[in-house]
Image 1 (tube, rainbow, N blue to C red):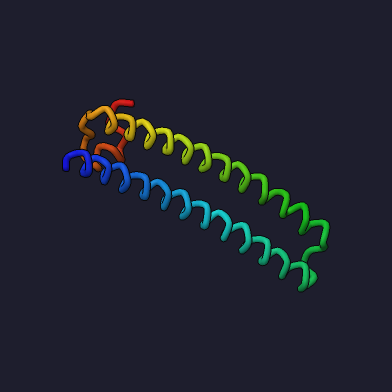
Image 2: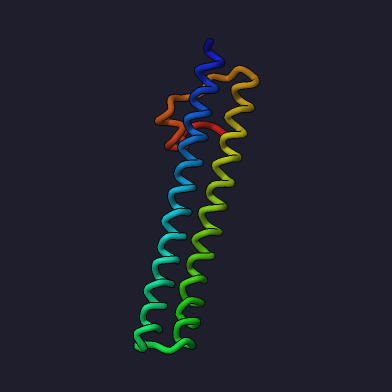
Length: 108
């Protein structure tokens, strides 16, 4: 029973990290699409030309790529943390509370 509780803690934490990753990724992608559409409307209205549109898109894609790389790296670190927690459960070590796990106050 105790092992099941420990595994449940790990599952809840893994779901939290996965949801956090998907949420941030969705916001980044939504922002990128919204800016691309907003710029395209400026092209259709004749306020900017197509060259300015493509230059603006390039300026938008660079920070998006950096953000994507950053959240992917953070997600990978979180997966490593989950793997370490599963190894702790396998050898029978008790895990701290969920709050402490989320705040990264456990030993690696």
